[in-house]
Length: 298
Image (tube, rainbow, N blue to C red; front, side, top):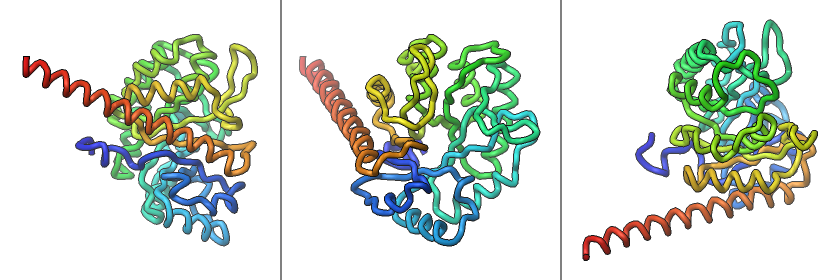
């Protein structure tokens, strides 16, 4: 899987989240606009009728990945294996390329309707990693866990970065790298966003998310996916490309969804940054080759 840039990632380029509220307009998308699309499987499993037909049309035209909402990987109750099996069938039915989820939990003897932080403890590392392996075994493939935004850290025994790295290493899973979540957490919890980015296992990143957020206060940002991406987050995305290459990147927008041309301007910005990163990497390789050649001729 890691032998080349071509097959290292499930998709390529710049993507967009497919939202039912904007479905009619998104049916006009072409592969010149976006390279791939993403949905939450829970919103589309067993959907029939008109929306089911429209979804089938889109999955036949575009590469798709899915980003789950309710696996609840850190919850105290047993995993919902019926959901996992439904996800597996859904992926096969629609030729879905990849499955990712949140490194969090959203249930405790009932659905909490929010993504809650898993305690950053060694016990939680072992517990969560075992559950991720269980899901991967049923699916027959690796999945990616997303670094999530959080607003409290109950029972914390290690820092967030150490926790993420330990889970991914023990579970032998992949990373969905969300740069907006890094920015939001860095403001809310007082750490350096670039240092955090540099400390992630970038070789495990299979694609990325970028999104907007809400400014509750100078020191409190809320991850909403309901606004345009701001300049510091674009800068962090550029830094991620410089560190790890121009990974496939998806623009998330879940509400306050603007007209499609406005969304596509942000997708185009992702494409420009990816192209710049690719050109810079190529120039760097050429310079290294010339240096080696010059030393050899000296």
